[in-house]
Amino acid sequence: MPRFFMENMEKEPGESLFITGQDAVHIAKSLRMKAGENLTVCGGLGYDMLCEITALSEGTVELRVTEKVVTQSEPSVSVTLYQGLPKGDKLELIIEKTIELGVSEIIPVLMQRSVSRPDSKSAAKKHERYCKQALSAAKQCGRGIIPAVGEMISFSTMLSRLNRHGAVIFFYECGGNPLSQAVEKIRAEGIDDIAIVIGPEGGFDIAEAEALKGAGAFTATLGKRILRTETAPIAAVAAIMYATGNMD
Image (cartoon, rainbow, N blue to C red; front, side, top):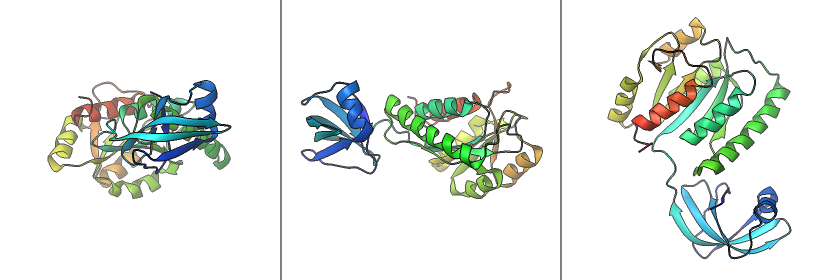
């Protein structure tokens, strides 16, 4: 069933709602849907609204809510990915795949060894594209929210934010503790807000690694092999989702 997002929207069965703009055009012209057909609207508040199309006009689709159900696709843990800014289009792959796996937020971080260093104008243009990609990925995999893609921040800004999370896992290419140890702690303490930190192509500068350790981050490894910057976050999110029972 086609799925559309309307942020901060919650309606009860029998109530009407309206889809406008590009989504309305997509429903009418690309999907060629008609009155009487059904689609799902996700309001981002933990519920899916199953709807019947009651009318279509130029740029507007009118719907009637037939059923409201709790979203089943969101994981029990919130994972924020702090991703060392990679070069080229690697971040697009990271956004798409980690959203499919269940990440809640992705924040690009300009690190010492980041090759790509866009200016503010270029960064803003890319951020707009990344947000659109996040929406597309969320629709495709049936997410209950649109995971946020933050604007690029500095390493020092990231450090100042880490204490917001219940646990911080720093994946270090120079080695660390088994990820299973971090997951055991997360499960034992009932932590449901996890941050993971991944370096760019050149890895972490030694000073960055020491700063993360000093901030209380758990230093972990993803095995004996050094993974590429676009592979590591995908592997990390998948491993955490599996270990916390979110891939059962």
